[in-house]
Length: 99
Image (tube, rainbow, N blue to C red; front, side, top):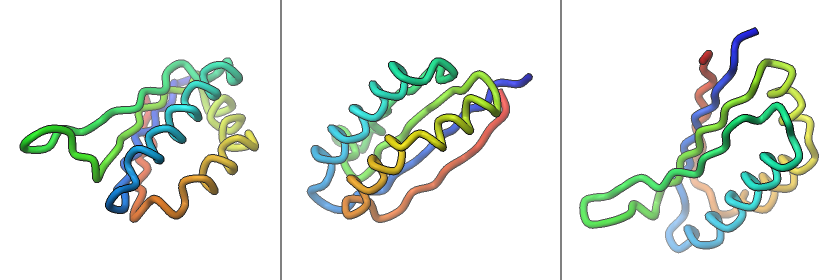
């Protein structure tokens, strides 16, 4: 079975970066600890012209297979995390990829 990768790009509201970053990094740690099918969960900070672009955050997640991704999507932590950051995000794009 093929591994599955997610690349997620968030566009944040002005001033929301620090709060969002704490929420999403906590989610990444929890996912890696609690979901054996999650092989990788990186939080990336895009660079801007003069330093970090605090209006964006990107994720790279790798799951062992479709069942592991389904388990992640069914985990109640995902819903709680989305609720926690809902007011901080302008836009979210998710790219589902075979690896």
